[in-house]
Image (cartoon, rainbow, N blue to C red; front, side):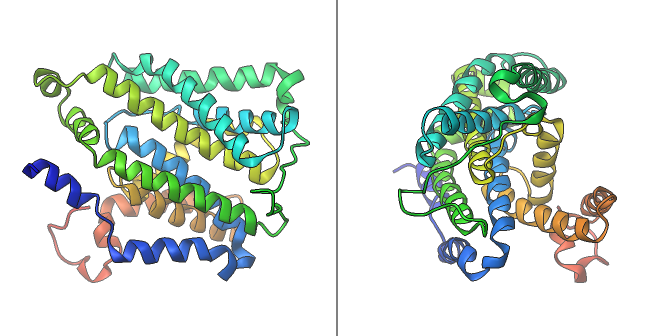
Length: 322
């Protein structure tokens, strides 16, 4: 085994604390049953953030239209449940597949141009899909949303109840499965080539890395995972509306990664926990101005730095990196 392969193997090896963390996460809907609904939301946002991190943190593709794939997964799963059959796992697979196909088609838009060009193109794709969903009201419900989505029991045994425990366990299980696969993905030789492209695309091309095909593959994978997050939202809420395509979805998931950190799979998870808990707590106190306090927190985060913010005793020192 070469040194590079050995390094990849070590970076992909699980730590003891990670096993404990995920066991605690899977048990949280039962240990904190009164908070199962917020746990479900956190798991969905974390999965959405993880999908964006694959292209932003590991490949260097900036996107403001990631909500397009989130919305595609949501509407696909909801329509499948309403028109075909209500099985959650099959609906999830349909959401992943349709979002992945859309991602493969849209991958051509991010192969050329600057970061600003990609921002505008990805944003445009989301706006186009939102308008389509609005105009096709005979299928999607238009501005009223797709209503009457009833899901069957998970694995034929576990009913989706009002408490949200089944939904939370379902979303957390999907998040864990995707996290394991994404970890193998980024710590593989393929993932190493993505980091090389992120650091210097021209140099990557010079050493023979097929940049275009690598970008297309990772963009498709990220789109499919975003579709999984959207499908989970539609299935666990029984509703899909134009809101899933809105710009704020893409902006919020970007903020989640700013809080948790990019280029680190746990960054999306940590950012989702902080963002959703802050949103829930602040909006319960001041529903109209919770975004102000989130913005203030982000300003402090940038000024102080992520590592120093969680270690207040270092605020008087200099030289710490975020």
